[in-house]
Amino acid sequence: MATHTEYTSESGEPIWGIFGEFKDPSAIYHGAEIVRDAGVKKWDVHSPFPIHGMDEAMGLSGPKVGYLVAFGGMLGASGAMLMQWYMNAYDYKFIVADKPFFAWEQFLPVTFELGVLISAFFAIFGMLALNKLPMFYHPLFKKERFLRASDDGFFIAIEARDSTFNPEKSRELLERAGAFNIELVEE
Amino acid sequence: MGHIVDPDRAISESKVRLAPGAARMVGALLMAVGAVALVITVVMMATAKDAATQYQALAAYHVGFMTVMAPTLGALVFVMIFQQVNAGWAALLRRQFENVLSMVVPCLFLFVGLGLLSTFFGPLWKWMDPEFVSGDVMYEVKKPFLNTTFFYVRAGVYFTIWTVLATMLRRYSIQQDETGDPWLTAKARRMSSYGLLLFALTTGFASFDWLMSLDHHWFSTMFGVYYFAETAGSSLALCTLIFLVLRQRGYLQDLVTVEHFHDLGKLLFGFTVFWAYIGFSQYFLIWYANIPEETAWFALRKNGGWEAYTFWLVVGRFVVPFFILMPRPFRRNKLILGFACAWILFFHGLDMFWLVRPEATVEVGAHIFERMPFSWLDITGILGPVGIYLGLLMFRIASGPLVPLKDPRLPESLAHKNYV
Image (cartoon, rainbow over all chains, first blue to last red):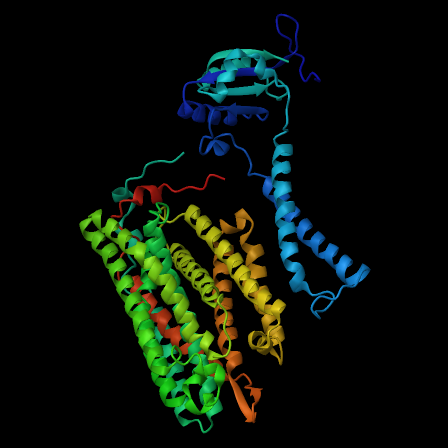
């Protein structure tokens, strides 16, 4: 993994970032607001379950997956129409019940279905891509304590590649946000 | 994060009650326009020399009646669904749906008017004319169901059911404003359970009777659902528009918020797609099977000047609102949402016109029919019922609080929020 920072830990390893623990959803919600207001951009909140309103507390912009789905839907629908036109009305003219070769009516079910299918593909794979999944390694997993993020732990992690990062200042920021057990994480 | 809001503190009189005199001017104006249009239509009908003009005016009045009947029935189904599924988010919105559904009584009078006009100047439903259907085998088999007496008996049953449901559901809600008794919610909920079943049956049969039987040869099992799609879409559009206007006039601040509008927009989007889905399903099977007695209805609407109308109806009722209501920021923008609502209501009227008006044909020779050209009677005939309906609705909105005051689900509705 490329090194993003000039900071190194005591053992000489490059530092990935810093993370701290929070007591409950309410504490981490208000903590996130403080970190957001400090202008930190490359950071994340980890909780065992979705916390309502967290995207706002983190200052995240709206989800982008919808645009991908809309694109996928239009791609699927127009592709399906084109495919059927090519097959039944152009390449191999096919008479069905004395209908016109290019009767949009009979092509619409396939157009609809393919529109749904391709938009669903864009939804699921677009979501995975936007979340950078699958991800086989993450520095935070080295910390035994962090595994509780899928059980009962609430964490905020600030990455060293953030422009405001500084081991001491970021520690102070997390303290001010109400975090405890603050630790540096090596890459 | 959701904050618990105390309804008693959030709701103040100035926010939920129209200022004295507000809306009454517009209401009176709309009623006057409707009344004048109605009088002109009836006078024209009475003085017309030819049956064709009479039929045209009658058909136009029928379009107006079905146009206002749809949001009324849609409001009924939404009130019952809100009560039945215990919809917390919609508790604040329910009152305007109740106002619209209470318009079922004016609709009853409009229908009585339609029946009388049809009897004197019609009949509007051609199968009611014994001469017209004599020797018609396809009518003979339907006669036990489709005869004038049973037709009006059925209409009476529909209106009885709708009026009882509408009156009781609204009364429970109004009573709760004063007493705050939570058991009234339970009562409304119990009534909604069987009410929904009754609604499905009566609305389906009413659309068969009033619209589908205009061409008594034609039948489509999908037709009831098609009309339901219109009722749901038009009532959502009308109620959303009412809330948007109220907000714009300075009422309901901090009560009905962008979050509620967002959800209304989602429902509106859904029922726009639903309309297209049902409309296409109906058309597709008939087109594919290609049986003359079924295709006749669409053939009438895809030929002789109606083909462009049919095309633009699909574009206006589905394609345009589909793309307007799809992006989230558009649904959360009051101006764009209001435009979409007005647009959908307009095309809802055009859809009703499309269902009724092509049936207005003149027999110029033995079994040779010619279409009647458009005239200003089409406009006055529609304007009559629509103007009176909207005018009375204005007075109804002004008559009481704009939201339920003591619904037990109010805190949930006040704190309603869309999380992404």
